[in-house]
Amino acid sequence: MDTLVDIASFYNFLPTASLILRPDEPRFTIEAVNDAFLAGTGTTRSYLIGQGFFEAFPPNNEDDGSRTMNIRNAFTYVLQHKKPHRIEKHRYDLSLCEDNPIAARYWSVDTYPLLNDDETVQYIVQGSVDITALHIAEIELRQKHQQLKLSNELYAYVNKATNDVIYDWDIENDHIGWGDAFFRLFGYEEVANFPLSKWSSLVHPADVTLLEKDLHEALLASSQNNWKAAYRLKRLNGDYAYVEENGYIIRNEVNQAVRMIGVLRDVTESTQYVRQIEAQNVQLKEIAWTQAHLVRAPVARIMGLINLFNEPETEECTRSRLLSCLNKSAADLDCIIREIVAKSEADNFDGKSSN
Image 1: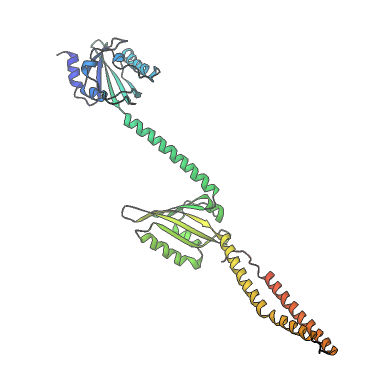
Image 2: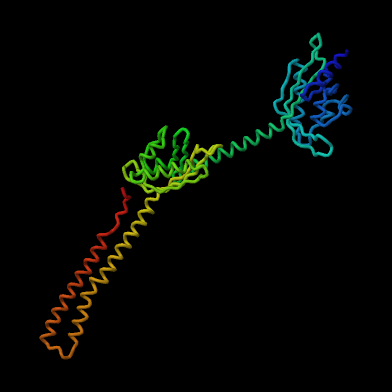
């Protein structure tokens, strides 16, 4: 049996798209193709057999010649060195059928020499694997990696710029990963392990019991994903900051809490401001009560004395005593007003967080 017939019969059973070429450089005439090659390229044996390789597969319109040269160099390498040659990724665009437009296709191309007994090249065998799907997947992976890189960079910048503390609690491994703002705002040093118990130790003693109970119930409630809390958290210097926390609970396929990410916001200033306003309101109410009761008495006396003083029947000696009484009532009123002013100045809210 003819050698070429034997080779062609063998290659017909291979899943790799393959063809056999004569070593008649520069034409490289196609002698045989297997069924996988016909299926993968949408061509026919009658079209391919007898044609030169570059006649059957002319350069694509957008090929500047480099792609064609890569294949020609592969053939030349095999002829000169009598060794296999591989092109990891080669682009050659084609259509699988007449109704479909030409589309970008990528191939992994292996070229082998088939040698005679005298070590001359009898045939060139080329196998091509369509790696278009892999190429697209690599592009998508690079894009996602770039997007992830940008997202991580954005997260890092936001983490440094914001005063909101971002955290990621790995519930299964009992570690809270804090953003930069936590160490900046609360004064602690970053540590390798930050368990929940350490966080609990920083919560104000008056808040911790109810807070832990509420968190535990939220983690056990399989339908709950959001958790909110307001409490006091200890700074390194011993002061307590008022904080508001918003967390999102991530659960596994059986709804067990495995992770929680969230934001911790220092609301000490706003809390103190509200408390100052509330204290001032109490103070104003006390002042209003004082005006309504304590001030009213001397004012009423003054008005009554003035009415008596203006009566025509009032004698001069009586008017003299009335003036003395007016003077005392005015002094009483002045004393009350001074007390009100002193109280207003003494009751200024100090603005420090409560311990």
